Amino acid sequence: MSASLYPYQFQPHRVRAEFFRLLPISLFVVAFGAAFGLAAIQKGLSPLESILMSTTVFAGASQFAAVDMWGAEVSVLPMIAVVFAINSRHLLMGASLYPMLRDVSPGKRYGLLLLLTDANWAVSAQEYQSGRRNLEVILGGGLVLWLAWIIGTGLGVYFGGLLQNPRALGLDMVLGCFLLAMALGGKKSPRILVAWLVAGGASLAAWKWLPPNMHVVVGALAGGVIGLFWLEPGAQSREDNLEVRHGD
Image (cartoon, rainbow, N blue to C red; front, side, top):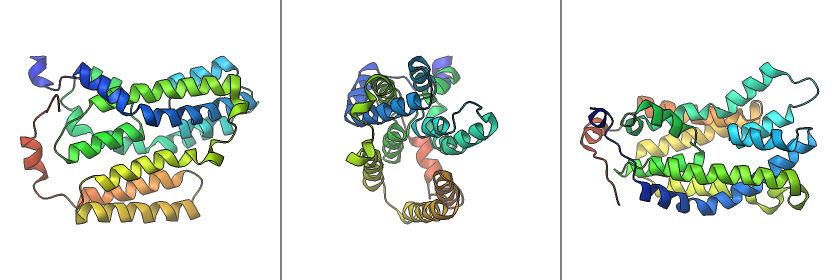
């Protein structure tokens, strides 16, 4: 009965393949994890607290923001608001994966979302536009990125002086370039191009005139509004006919 309700079945060999597929990106995640570990130690967190935070939170920008606000008297409510604002894009990312996630049992579904990042979401979303369902990249790719973040944090905690400023080496551009490549390599239509242009323009305006990190939220919402009101012709019929493909 459960198989008919939740037909998507994860393929272990594909999970392993997606793990190694995102392994190159994870090397750059290690560098930023090291930068976070160093920042956390400098703000007074213990090595155990720093590594535990990366293990349980797994949200780079939010962790940097939280550590920046850390002090003898932590303002909990403002910190919660900032972290929520930075991570609110995951609301839209998760919603965009719903056509695939509804075929997975609730326990697996929410466990899977714990590993959702910009990188593995971009790959999964792009392949879904091409008619292929790939949740294995969320699981396998998310695992390698999570492990890389933890390892990087540990290196930063104990050897942070070796890489104090990864931005000086241009490492902060790697993920952005990866996401741009995913966008350019995906499906192109007037609807998608307009959504990208609106999202980019709104994000730049928010970056200039709104508080830090708000450009992420504003850009995502602006692009999402275009997708909400400009529906793609025949999208529902294609969704109804789309079948899970394994072993591609």
